[in-house]
Length: 230
Image (tube, rainbow, N blue to C red; front, side, top):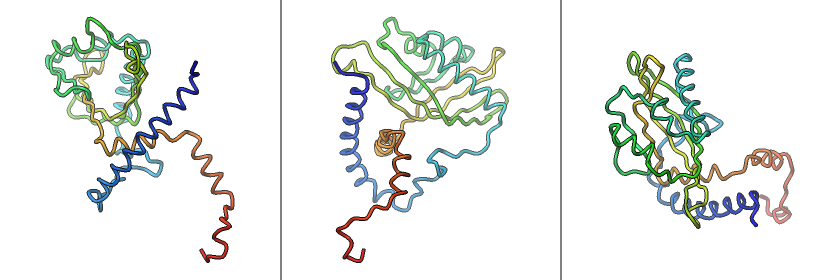
């Protein structure tokens, strides 16, 4: 019987092989196209995005909505989303899902998407980071953040293996009597090359920095180079 640690190791090894092969092709394809471009623009020394300062009060208010969204998903009570998170006063809410080719607009389609008669998800976990907000008009706010998810579907065989993903999200919130409510949820997936690069970064284990610092603190002399002058 496979233990959770063994399953995690196997998953990482599989993804590393897939992403390694894909990355070779992606780098070869993109190296010429990206020459001279500032591919790291907007990132700090820690690799995280650097955004202009946002209104702290507005940031805290939208952050509270996202925390509630995260809590609802953790409880697997997705039926609360249309009532507690979305703006039911908006007659044309919009949902741009990465897995669908077309945009969903209006409650007739959104309600069916968020609360179908038969739920195929066995479990779903959702989280976010790097939130930034911008007031578009009085009572209207744009939110930008990164999000991740883990999902297990009701199926047999390989399709039942839990899977994960991540991308960026743009949301619009309207201020109503009962607080901020979401009227737009737009997932903004990375392009194939950029996604592969980000995935390979995520595959690096958390203790790599410690390992790297240890390597840097030691003198590593290759005896084969002693007489080469290198």
